[in-house]
Amino acid sequence: MAAMGAAGAAGSIAPKIPRLVRSLPPSSRPHPPPGFLKRLPFAGNCRHCSGDDRRGVGGAGVVPTAAATAAAAASMVYERELAVAKKAASLAARLCKSVQKSILHSDVQSKSDKSPVTVADYGSQAVVSFVLEKELSTSSFSLVAEEESGDLRKDGAQETLNRITELVNDTLSADGTYKVSLTADDILAAIDRGKSEGGPSGQHWVLDPIDGTKGFLRGDQYAIALALLDGGQVVLGVLGCPNLPLAALHDHKHSPQSPVGCLFSAKLGAGTHMELLDGSSPTKVQVSAVEDPADASFFESFEAAHSSHDLSSSIAKRLGVQAPPVRIDSQAKYGALARGDGAIYLRFPHKGYREKIWDHAAGSIVVTEAGGVVADAAGKPLDFSKGKYLDLDTGIVSTSQKLMPALLSAVQASLRETSESVGRL
Ligand code: AMP
Ligand code: MG
Image (cartoon, rainbow, N blue to C red):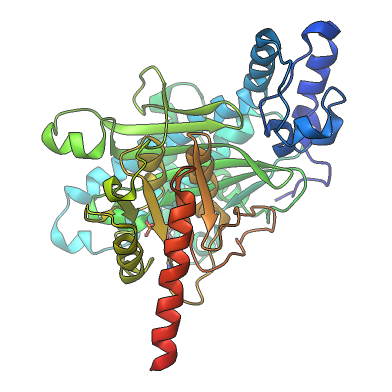
């Protein structure tokens, strides 16, 4: 696939704020929210801000109209991209839901068969790739995605490819927006548009077509995770979580009839919203306001092979957390954290595992725009500009700004204790 050129499509969207700013009379020129410009690739372009303002410590003399105008300007950037991302993730979620339903209704023998998840994985990627390319008429398009079509092109894969093609066409025609009938070759091409490597310049879409495949097969949580990088930074993200209830997880336990299937969406400077995948008005969400870790609960992977449960148990004990861990699959954890179902996210893969950007890009902006912080175990922000992989120290943690210092101290202490006990062996 054509990787995006160095300047990439960033040029098509990034200058919108400065242009808008210039069109305003000087008295009402906006002052961006603290830290906002600094996080945008064109930060240096705003001639209306002093260095202090860019560091987010200014603000004196800002009139409310200016702040409101800045917020309005911020809300217009990436607006179209966000709407398209939501559409793509919702359609992919519809496809995945139909496959998961058929797995759960099938007999025991076919439940141990991994091929349904393969079909849904490729199908989801093809749907997202198709919608992004169809809706965003950029001359260059870059997608970094988990799947590639190599196996589907091998002898003996024709039947699987036909099933995927049928599934994608059924999903698109049920929606009715696109009057198309894709061929198997179209599907292969759509999947292979996800071969980009990402990087620090230009725009790159980042996709995990089914995050949490183990949860998908079990009938539990999984997510369709889609984000946009611009200049190496995540500027928007959506998480389609077909099995996550709209109500908080602990409330849903008591009223299991409440609706299920959430779509989280976040855009730099515009907050995080949640709505039903089947359609409802979006509501703004915020991370937990809990101030005492003893009152917090924490999320971790369901699969002990993906994250050390012993280490998180040690960290939780150190913090005085009383509640048992909430173990769920996929980036649905980030969604649940963003709306305050729990207050802490812990992820400590076993030695040698390298995190991929598609496992955290959408989730991280969903949490940070809801007021949270996402960092590695050393407290460093995640760096999505290095290609497909995240280079990080030991693990990933996330919580509210208030709880982060205490969490990082506990993480460091537990890591020290673990390495000392390994050293003694
Ligand atoms: P979770 O649902 O939180 O357990 O995370 C799911 C993600 O973990 C998958 O999308 C995989 O990319 C990733 N994964 C796969 N193998 C491992 C591993 N050995 N350690 C950590 N993460 C893994
Ligand atoms: Mg994944």
